[in-house]
Length: 258
Image (cartoon, rainbow, N blue to C red):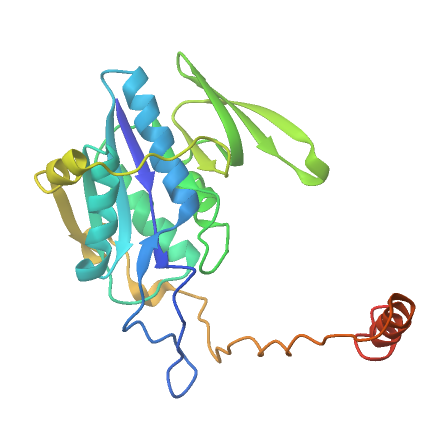
């Protein structure tokens, strides 16, 4: 039984982002890269499925520059994935082209029972790749999944919808599950796991191998801008009554929220 996990490497949220001189891209030098947090839930769910189904094999799949994203695959394998596939691409691809490449890599491996992904990547928050992969593979899917139970050939997914409402969806395998926070608690990569990961196979493929071209991307991001600096905190002096009056004035005249 083959299980695939689609993961993405993203800048750490604590990394200080710098833009190129022409504001057309992010300078990647000095950026600390991590696996997108929602993808960690996907990895953990795949490993837990494997632990409860002894014949399952978990394969992590990612796309990006080989020299960089290799570390993300090593982390996934240190957590418990059996092997991985690296789709080498130096260019940023849009969601659809990324999905085509991931789906092609999965198809090339043959039969599969489940595909896991995060509900979104925290860098661009497009929230579309998982659904697109499922559509290309022609399998059912559920996103924003916070709980999943598995039966013979079926998955019951509990997902969050607006207003705190829960929705239950029953999917027939093969299926894709896009993980939300709360689905599980991702494990840390142990030292023995890290040592074992170095011996696990990483299959390297190119976009050309998969019949996908970077030129197929239809969406490009330009004119990046950093958020404006937040104004310094303003301290209001005086007795409580004076402070309240001044606060109301500031909210009405400066912040204009009242």
